[in-house]
Image (tube, rainbow, N blue to C red; front, side, top):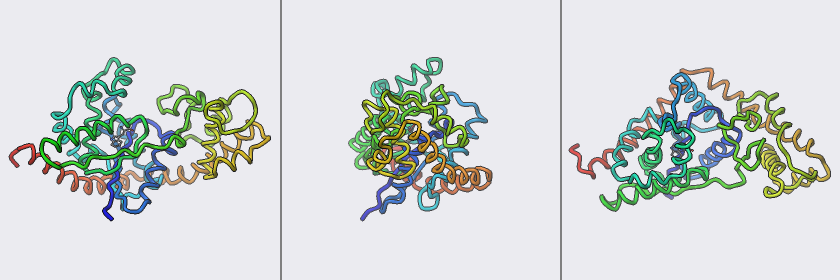
Length: 332
Ligand code: TRP
């Protein structure tokens, strides 16, 4: 059976939340361990500068993210793990693809509209071009499947459109990628507003668990989590979003199925659920945090990992870029 190329990226902007960890990163590790998959993961630092970044913070966050991914079990030898800015083909293909992308299409992107509102003083071309860079990421590696959150689905549609458009003009060049959109169950809500996603940009620190928060912080945040009226502990995201969110977190942290959890908490109080959830999250994150500290304390090692990944990614990226340039008609 032919190997499938799996590609995904994560921005090195700020902290990694429990939501990122449970959603994206756990899924990456699972996909990586499925047979016949060849996985390529990038730290999407070029995407990050579409919003103004402090240079020292960008550098720190990029290395943090690399260490977090290693700690989470991304296998940098069997998969490829690298920093996007180390592979210049991303920028170059993105320019080429720009010439096959319409301004109207970019203008309609939901995330561009949202981010334009949020950063009204800095609606730069990169912000608008974000999906084309993402398409370049994916298409450079002839990717078959892209694991993403639901918020990235529209960007993936554009990547497909661009690939098809290019193939129609120049003949079969790019693989048309498929999205693998994360299941809803893996979506972790804010602890303070269980109707909203747990987001690292949430101004309320009690709403978000960072995977590197101290055990004390984690326990205190979960104890303060907003719950619902009534007192019964049941999984009912519509009518009991707060309790259901805690149950989801607990079920993932303990790797226990929902039915048996709900049974276990029959007749118990919200307070019991919170304590159990806090303990399970702390237990889940402890070994992760220890591995992280180990990787993060050795920048030389991190740089070796990054270089090794970039070299291997470049081999593939270079080949695709050459093919694309040839098709377009550049003198090679
Ligand atoms: N835009 C993605 C996000 O914020 C990150 C990303 C960048 C990505 N390039 C990618 C995801 C390529 C999948 C494939 O979540």
